[in-house]
Amino acid sequence: MKHSIGGICVSIVQKEQHKPREGFATSLGVITATLGSAVGLGNIWKFPYMTGENGGAAFILVYLLCVILVGLPVMISELIIGRTTQANAITAFKRLAPNRPWYLVGVSGTAASFLIMAFYTTVAGWVFSYIFKAASGVISTTDPEVTTQVFKTSMSAVWSPLLWQWFVLLFTGSIIMLGVTKGIERITKTLMPILFLLLLICVIRALTLPGASEGLKFLFRPDFSKITGATILTAMGLSFFKLSVGMGTMITYGSYFGFRENIPYTAVKVMLSDTLVSILAGMAIFPAVFAFGFKPDAGPSLLFITIPTVFASMPLGNIFMVLFFLLVSIAATGAMISLLEVPVAYFTEELKWSRLKATLVTIISIALVGTTATLSFSTLGDTKFFDKTFFDLYDFLTSNILLPVGGLLITYFIAWKWGLKNIAREASNNGSLSNQPVINIYFFIVRYLAPIAITLILLNGLGFIKI
Ligand code: PHE
Image 1 (tube, rainbow, N blue to C red):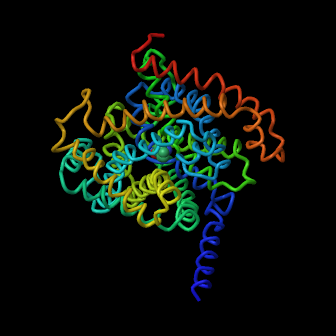
Image 2: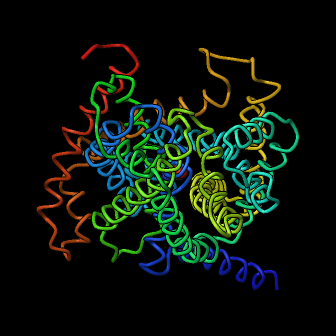
Image 3: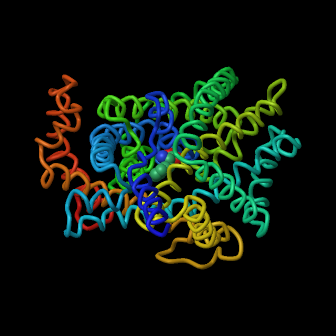
């Protein structure tokens, strides 16, 4: 009897061990999940306000260069590392370089996901709350004074932004608890098409505003006198943040890719679609900024004070405004899911926690750190480090330091430690894809161009060298 119970136990353990790792079941799911991670507040909130603060078209050009020469190669590298190792960001490096300190890249990436979530959920909380503000009609006005006032009052309150932030964490956490296929893949498959449709509606409305052309000029006519070392670092930081690279999200998602997926192709598709969404978001926002006499350099509040005026001036504006903030919430959700998945994948795989426990521990820790970011606009407004509030500090530290350094180490690792032979095998699916020329270009960029560019931009942007 004892023996047979033991036997059953052994066979259950064996079954557990051989249970196939969960992953994305379809190629469409691969694209929607990966794009869902890339598209987020970065496109609709950060990209427009940073473009506005840094002079418009010239900033966009620098940003695009960074996306192509740095962001994209890091993305391909991470997806390759993830799929080869079939593991979370930390374990992935342990498998490729056993007994070496490279896994610390994964540790720092996982820490970055907490810090990004800390301030991301603050903004996501504002966005979610704006769905209700839009529905109630308090921001249905073309008077910039009123929309500015409503925004200032709501973010400087103490409890309501905090409760919204915690709600957002619970909401995203509940999707993550459903798992990779039933949670991440299914939800992003539904949400991404809705997002594109809603964005197109907003762009059409903004472009038909009287005076829209001023906004377009700002977006598309470059003035290079605005570009400084710090601006270039900001653009590069944005390209990392935008493509969700430099911190392990793409390693984690790559580990859910099937072995038939064409990694370089998928990465290019995601990069192009993500850039399109940013440009479209700019086209929805800047015409309104100029049409209603706002300043383009309003900073993080730009979205919240200009967008209401776009909709307030049109028939059925309230409904469209609700849809718009719904769209931003959807975009933010896809990105937050991928940020949560980084630590959750580690906790479940390495520490063998259940998904429920891993998710709860993660969201509670983020809520604790995130509270300091949200309160940066009220009670903690005067607490500053290097002249930055908690909110600004988490943002600066992740986009401008942790992600670029992570990206630098990842490209260095893959090109100089792992090598061309392994890359070629993995990027061509064992030779079954005929994409050798693409792989050669990628290899050149990742071996020389990307690491050198990242290093120079970092040192120059932080003031260590002057180019
Ligand atoms: N790419 C997301 C956005 O643009 C943010 C993000 C950064 C998501 C890093 C995952 C990892 O909003």
